[in-house]
Length: 402
Image 1 (cartoon, rainbow, N blue to C red):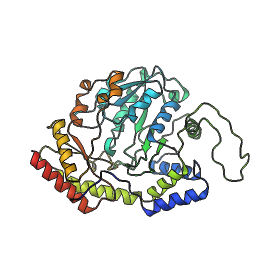
Image 2 (cartoon, one colour):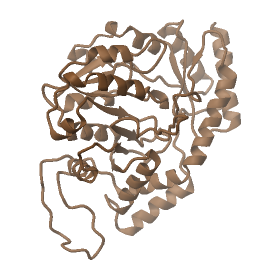
Image 3 (spheres, one colour):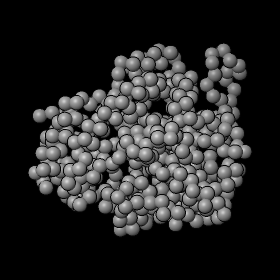
Image 4 (tube, rainbow, N blue to C red):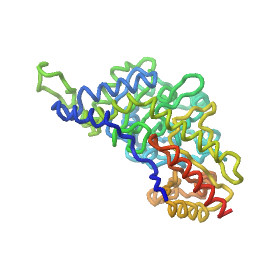
């Protein structure tokens, strides 16, 4: 019997050497490597600037704070996502507005999204679940159609003149649509995750990138985000010997979310291997597709269609079945050595969100998708033999349970 882990990180000698070199350099906290990684992310996303931080959650929060969103404001997010998409809304003092997902989809219900917008709405959080890009053209149409009721509360909001699209791209770095548009240039702001299970990892970490806003200096925005992420301190890293070498000011009471050069060097080595990593993931997803497409009662996603995908999560769904069936399927797969997962339990099912007042009964599409969802193992070092074994076990267990 094989043992197939769910999603171990792909760490080669290149990442190990890069981290060791940084540790020997005497510059292990935020410095030149972090700046280089930020520039590489911008180049990948076709954007001018990015700022790397210690998590995608921090990146998302800093974007909302830069936009001046807070008490009395509303931010809309889908009910089907991980907590980070919504918890930061609570952290900044704004109201979380959860919207159901579309029927037969893991993406936000665009009609329900449009109906949920009020004069208090300041931002929308599309989530590229599994790595498949949301319909940003539709979202743009929606926010443009609501410009007449938008009430800005700071200069950036005034320059935008509409609700901000603050995309949760935690799963979608390197996703690209057929028209060449990449994750990172589709929303006004996009937050990426480099957590250990992501396609590109730094163990923990994230990056925030954004599109230019007419009338707002993008260099100034970059400085503000870096200030937000490191105590409001105006002293950035300086090459040795540059003067004044010690002077600094605290411009406002900021936060502590900066990335270290140790993590950034890890990420740079990963980006050097991005083509190799993505090629491997696409191959795995195609093999799963070929084996599972058309199976009675098994729904799979289209990672190779017009939406564009990073091939992050291979999600299957037994939507004609209940939770008990799904859970038993996972238990039987585990008995055969195959680790699976669930992405995700909808937010209204969690205690923290129940306590705020959310009820899963108000989100029937989210529950319908959740009850049958199973995510299969996928990692870039997965061998053909391992993929074949997962498929063999899937067919054996599902066939026995039908």
